[in-house]
Length: 202
Image (tube, rainbow, N blue to C red; front, side, top):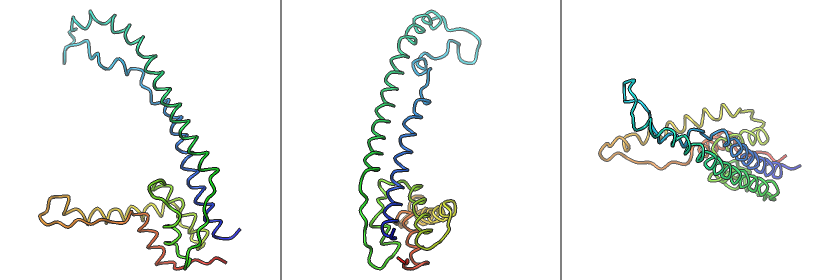
């Protein structure tokens, strides 16, 4: 398999992995249902800071219990419908990504930066998945064994510098400059592009 096809396959794998994560998140949503949701509006039966009951709430308690017993199954049903819809939508996206044919780009100059701009859509691939993808690319293209943890540290440092540069503006300093930066992961790609140069297709 040539390098161009391998890079395309790694990109597709990154999108598939992210879509699989979305499916897992949707399924785990079941655990987020709060059985006391329909009870929260009732409040305490005690006067604040004392052990004395509020007579009106004591009198209404049986009716509120009936309401809770009736409303909770309905709330649970809507919760489950939301989960089913979320899981179905996520699975559909996963299937579309898995069976979509990934375009293989020919990048003039064999530059890491050119590859990144052709293949990676940062609006649809999260920062964490971009870092994992970059790590796999560096290993394939340059035999550069940079772990995702190491790359994440470098991304955090870039983000820290960007935030610091805009501190005067956001702190209200008069005439404080405001800078628009390239996203941190893209900055890291450009840094590696300068450090490592063109990759070999051999």
